[in-house]
Image (cartoon, rainbow, N blue to C red; front, side, top):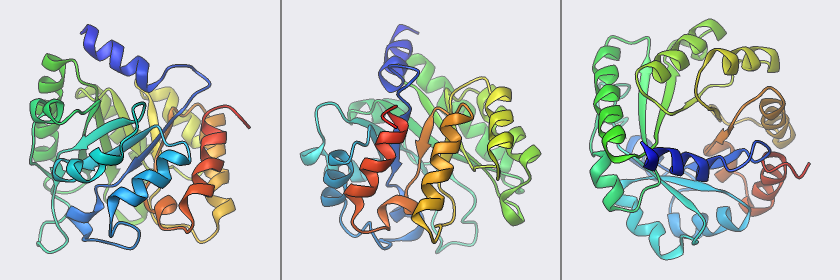
Length: 250
């Protein structure tokens, strides 16, 4: 277990330094959406802006490797489905922890969608991934979402986050439950670090930054936000503002 402890310390080196991670795995499920037409230039901007970790699919590692900085952490996401299929909310494993380590990963990422008929299959995969990561000393991030109208109630989001942690995730990413108080309660009842996801793109940049700041004040461990960041141009100045909040500079 020493390997996992060491890697988690690198992800969370200081209580005042929250993790600034950016998921770039969307092209598998959604196609080359706005902002993700080319990964390498975006990865460069994000790193220049202060991002700590980039999370990509295993095939996309080849695109970011040439520009990945020596201190930037790499997450490899191994859950997949596409919007072209009839079961787009069912995420299946398309890689292993061993494969991720061979690609240079500092973390394995998977997704579980709660509240749908296929939930048990994804929980089984979470257990499989947790066992693989335990054997290799690799931290496991679970992107835990409640797939109901409105994204789930605060109680349901807390349930999903706790279920993910208790099934073996070392870090949980989940939806912001609507208020700082609710997020503080979520962090208290989840026994591993909690990252907020971006969800639906917000119209106003300041509203987005307020949620990031509120999550820090409520005890969050950082962010794992994609579209609310990379679909705003230019990316680097906004990334710098986020980094100042997460890294204790503001």
